[in-house]
Length: 269
Length: 332
Ligand SMILES: Nc1ncnc2c1ncn2[C@@H]1O[C@H](COP(=O)(O)OP(=O)(O)OP(=O)(O)O)[C@@H](O)[C@H]1O
Ligand SMILES: [Mg+2]
Image (cartoon, rainbow over all chains, first blue to last red; front, side, top):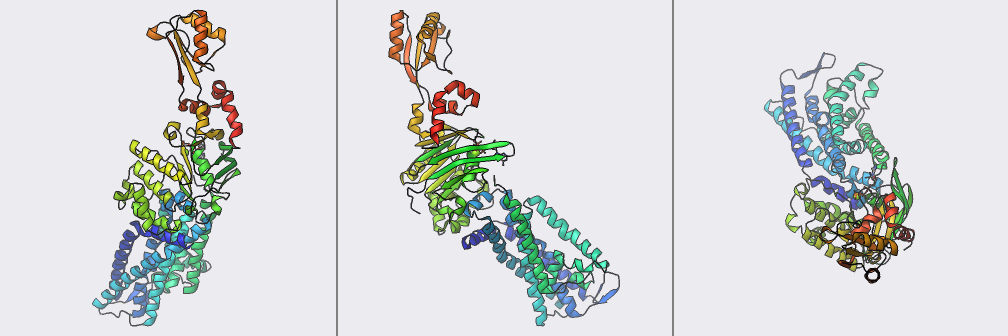
């Protein structure tokens, strides 16, 4: 089992995907952090809520909203890294040597899931630090408080990194459920950029359906951070951090199980 | 794991159907340690499917396949027991040869240093740091072979390993496989051409249409290559009459009787089941002038083609010789 973990980890770090996407992640998050921090620190210091009214924003809220941007906008990248670690085995037909080395398909799935965690941590830490660094710099430039002297803010930052880590594992689960790389990438982009944001907005407008929106994966990821862009703009409320983590891990596990009993049930020819 | 006599491969009543296609059909054979066994059959015969079942990648419809008495999926650290490379070995194109081996080293239970050793062994040291995406077919075959050797396994299963190798590479592969078998390892190599492995193998297992058609030592297979008597006479009609009178059997794929002899006139006959002395004596007694009388063997390749020919043709051509070993094949 440990051998498989090491092998799976080595697979991720011996191709270019991980660092190419990591550079994209860091660049994108630094840009988003700086841009949002500038926007929030201009006079008004308020944001426009979903229903159009102005929501007053104190400096801590502004800071945490910026620092949690990775769990709102950046999670697609660790998700993709996890996803590609699985779909590339199908795309390049390396599943045969992989299963020759580890014929126990349960252990193989678990190894893939667990081996993605270090990569998820790396994305989480660097992606979040890029946002915090660029965002704090922008706050300083605009003479706004960075909030970094507040321990609670650091808690939010740490949990944001954790959210990205879990997203990487979700990517692995999704890869098993959807091994066709092109299909999987299209689904990820469509779902994260389009389907879920709209679904959350629509569900949030209806009092009866609003609770369901909390269980969407993106909402669960944001819940891990605790407080984020969408909730600051009033688009539905979130679960607690622990519950959010449980829901998102649940997605990873359910998707992986789905893949185990469909994709990996079949003959490998 | 040091090779020992317990690492035989046992395939028993193995069957696999893919929808309507019966890819492997009640196949039984044994592969012995210390020998190189050729696993032969034409395209689509079911070789790769059999190997995949042996390796736990494809679930058999019926039957069992074991290595040293155990199913592949029950082996602990299988790369230390079985080194397997299936046809069209696939690699991640973005990974270097060395990294490819380093990925599998933990599961083979070997230190990273071993990756360099096997690269050396297959002559790829110079390309260790190159991405596999840029490798030629022959280089990929060598890397696949290096992967199988990583865990120093007592059993090797190689699907068409000579594909894409240059003549020098084929000779090198032959020597390597012979050396591995000499160390007591079980070596099974598949191929769709007998001549490719003829100089490498000790035993042959031949399948066609998913069924076993022959299993024996290579020497016994050579025994099936009957010598033929070639006889030419300027008098085609008299030659035909003599052949008919004596009841000699013409080789089915031999030169047809009648015209076409030496210098374009006369007749030629290729006969099986007789010898030059008999034919010569009968011709002398009949007063028939002969211009050629010689024995020549048919190539093993002809035997192979005859054994693996589609069913109706096989019955017509070979009859008894093809059928007898079929029955004995599984019980060797
Ligand atoms: N996944 C599959 N689905 C359907 N049919 C298959 C599948 N895999 C193999 N077959 C069929 O099973 C038969 C045996 O194929 P197999 O690949 O085992 O032959 P082979 O002996 O390895 O041939 P070759 O020398 O061409 O490699 C063929 O008729 C093939 O079409
Ligand atoms: Mg094949």
